[in-house]
Length: 178
Length: 170
Image (cartoon, rainbow over all chains, first blue to last red; front, side):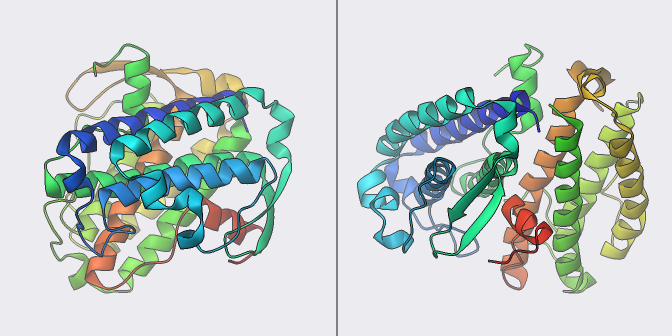
């Protein structure tokens, strides 16, 4: 497992989240709070962004040895009214989380990635998994839900810009334009 | 970047593709051929799997030094046809991944042209990551389509793969 690769994946993760969040913000909070369909894992754009944010927050906490347990509805850190009254409010909180997450990654050494992380899911069930794979899981999880967000944005407005990893690599190396 | 990380990633990639493909295929060819909606990047489940196959074929060709001018995938009219062709590609892709030796292989610059002729130079490592990430994006679309056609499919997230690999369950 490579630390440099993981840092690149997280740079992509932040860029992609921010790209879609900015598109959604231009549509306004009413659109972001509109129910789009039960086929999605969260019914509104805002709740989908909140889900990605919340899962990033939970995993960062677990990697540091603290596993919040309980119903998502009862956890203040995931409460929509508290954390995401508006998309802009969520975006501000997310900046702080991104810094914290990046700081955690910066402090890792290669040997840390093999370390087994003992954690509990919200249900209370306990697991032990290698940190490297868990770090990779979080970015993959973000891609899964950004795909849903892209489909939702297409339904309410129009197709958003691509946020794939290749596009990020091209932009960063100056081979493509924003 | 490490070769072990890429091998893990592609173990997961194949597991997730098969998990979702098998679930969708069990719904039957007519359901997989049904148009679900223009909001998706391809209108049917069969076409979406065809796109996954086509993208993987194009990228494997580029990694090996050839830049195709067209991308296959749209020609498949049945899931069975996708499977029959994909199995061979998957074996070829796996052999390519298994043959990677060290970080120098991942740092090798791949020079290729898109199907429109635009040239790029990118290290192999990020391109290997891109193909797996691209598939996660489209599997998410397929999961939503399958939910609309039938019901929610099993989770194919990386964490579920880690649990399955270590004999743990949710």
